[in-house]
Length: 273
Image (cartoon, rainbow, N blue to C red; front, side, top):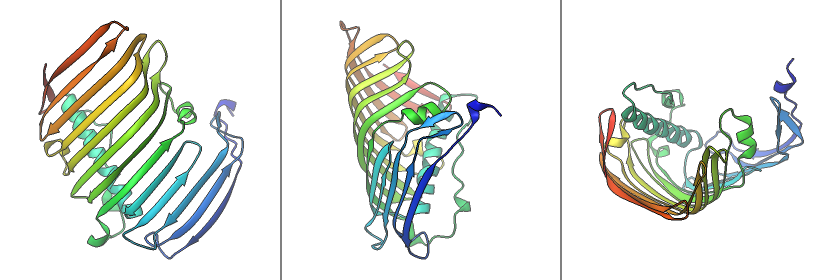
């Protein structure tokens, strides 16, 4: 066979779980990955640990520790149902953004098939939880995927509230470093901040109802070979109407500043500067 596509995984796992179904199972599991390769790519050795506590249905907790990131979720959620709803609504939002951006309407993101889920009671539907993610490095993930190299280091926290009919999501984060591409052809951001509040995520056309606020800033950055500094971007959206503003310094000397409005129309975005 082709040595470039060979996989050799060496790992050890330990599992301690109690419970009868996915709705009440609690305990911890750990997996240790020793020097290994997957399809010709070296994997970072390390420990993956999962701790789940569902004894209190309104105060569940899930903690995941790994070489890539540490994550925690605390509050009211249903493991399989909440995951499916978030993936489904995220796919619908991505489809709506793409649908307005292209006349050809080539949809590459498929929504999650919720009908494949087992039956849930209405009491299991509501979500009200907080999350935190400390992203350490994504370089090993980047090396396994085809396309431009990328990496992210930063910390993010926020909340998710609602159900399959209406979602509210928030995120506040610090971006230590983010890049995609190369030095000559790519984007780099250092020492950045992000704050996002999105309300009324619902329906097959979420942009029709979405109310959102987004604020981003960064100390230094680069687009291709052009250095950037003190960048700021803000956007507001209510229904299908919104405003945006941006400013920063390019090439160490040129001050950039722009603002305008945006209207979401069938198969296009109308932008007025």
